Image (cartoon, rainbow, N blue to C red; front, side):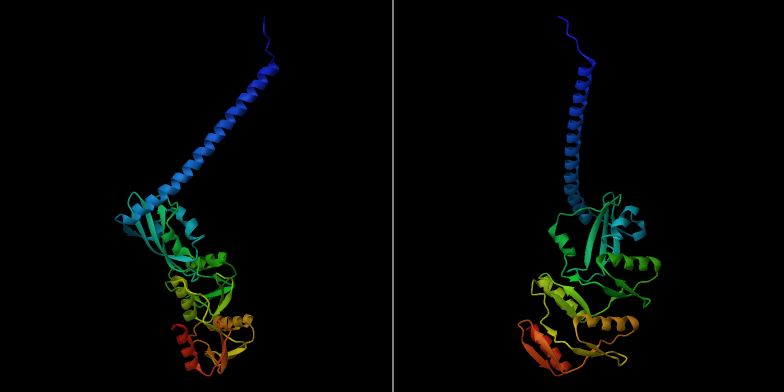
Length: 290
């Protein structure tokens, strides 16, 4: 008996064959890519350890592969390169110092392959260097070495600082954060930090695992005398921006705003105390550390 195979049957069989083949190839390709990605992450940690332990040569930042710029000018735009070291036939170890004081640690190392790809570390110890102590409440202001100011309206605007240094390659001084600043802590409370000492105290509490809130806050309204004799009254938290605006207009000022006494402070437990002068104010701060 002669079997007749139609063109339509052949066409359907061909379509089915190519469909199944394409599916199998796609599955194999996906599995291969997934395996490759997991291997890369694993190999990255091993390569980082080899770079760390290897003998290295200090080189200029300009000698880094061009591929590193997307990282250094992107997620790490808040930091500047302190040193670059090359481990021959392995990769690069780049020491960074951050101008963003919201991190628990301002110094960190990042690693790149010889081609300039950032190496991904799975070490929790390395990740801690980029752990946030708090979040800035934007906008914040930076005074640059030429006394100009840059306003950062979001975390993405740290790239503006990077752009300034690119346009001023001879500048060696770092930017100055303009106080007071508001910060949001881990428990979502907002604290106003009046100066670098208060910011340092909060960051120290982060490292020690202590309560990050200030020991006490000023009860508003409170007034400040500026270096030129100007008196600024702060009646609500938003008025602290008046102090920042004065500092931006007077970038050479080195004297902190002087609080006008008497004033009231409120401790964490809600207790109110009247402070007569700067000596009593410093004593109240000292009592917090006991």
